Image 1 (cartoon, rainbow, N blue to C red):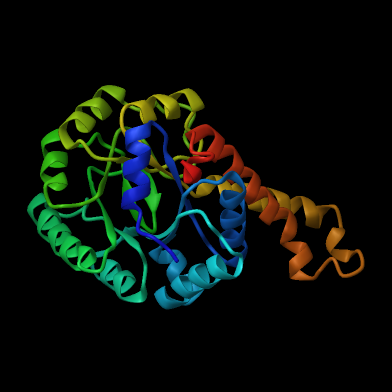
Image 2 (cartoon, rainbow, N blue to C red):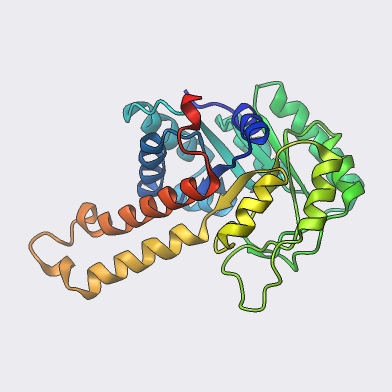
Length: 288
């Protein structure tokens, strides 16, 4: 059975490690994430953006895929199914479809509207035992067409959002979605500490791809308990698939069979998952 993300993140927050959030894009992604996390005995958050939901056929399809694969593979570690950067309507659809965790991203709205809609989503979700992530301050880069310069979140606004009843909070601390540019200034740990002291709850670090390990570890020490990874898995999948095709493997025997064609990319996703679990310090946490 899938679980919400509150308990696993509270545990991570209290014990000084972070739970990985991996976005899924299809069956291969889902299977790779589940199998790798079972092997590493760590809880995990499998997430979908609304763009991925549309690509995969709808909220019910994604929920059914993750739930039934989880059961058929005999997964024993805690797994949450999360909506990433959900709109107001998208969050409600995810709740109805059986997601166990949702993010309502009202960061682009006026503050009062963000707070009001977040409270509504919290009420709807908590009535069904579903955890909620909220956001203030934009995260840099682009996510499903929403672009931000990655400004630093306002500490007082973070406190107000935390008071809506959310379970964990995403706040801009200089992080960006996608590949980090060469002139990136790094995470702002002063602002992270201010936010952490103000909200006293698990903090979410979006844009986990490419942040140096020493910055990740310091962020975790300061209250980051959930780290989102997507682009790195996509790049690894694309690289491995390209190498398979360029080596002519798809023309050898039945190398064109999608089960063979997609196998190297799937293994590459697994390798990224293993690497991130090690970096975030959550290996074995499901047994503690």
